[in-house]
Length: 222
Image 1 (cartoon, rainbow, N blue to C red):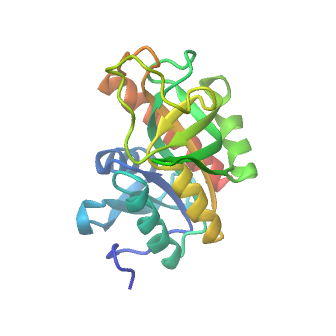
Image 2 (cartoon, rainbow, N blue to C red; image 1 turned 60 degrees about the vertical axis):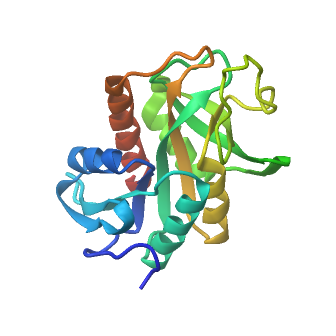
Image 3 (spheres, helix red, strand yellow; image 1 turned 180 degrees about the vertical axis):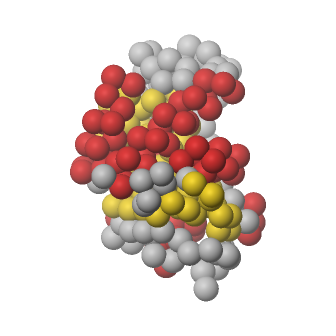
């Protein structure tokens, strides 16, 4: 039995990963017919069910930050997950992305207190399917993943500003840990805040989450 997750229903080989348990519930209701809660231990809500096309799919919350996500991913691998797409949120660093936009990750930099760390790429085939499904509703992006997102109060650009389009707290860790576990993983991120500091509304994030979740499901199951 895995150390963190305590599944009460079978876990599918394909999974959508989200940080927020509320987004897990929302996507389960959107993507699955009669979803069953497959985990509630530690507040990491997970759901499993069939899509309208009859495919098995799990949707699992990973919590906040890379360490939590890495532990959940290892448990999921032990439970039989082989492919996954992260549908998360990010803060834009480049001026182009607007609140509520979707960014498909092409490269993720692990950025810690000592500066830039390893660079990891997602699964190429899953990423290509994501971009095909989303079409004009996404743009390709490079992200920096940090333990703590830098604030904007002092007006200074973060040290990774010239290298990435956005920053988040999980993607690099998930991609790197997934590679270690021999999983195929891709990621699409919702812009929760623009480079200018404009915040996405709850409605914008929900609509983008639904769009990203549907594309993730289609990319995994096609």
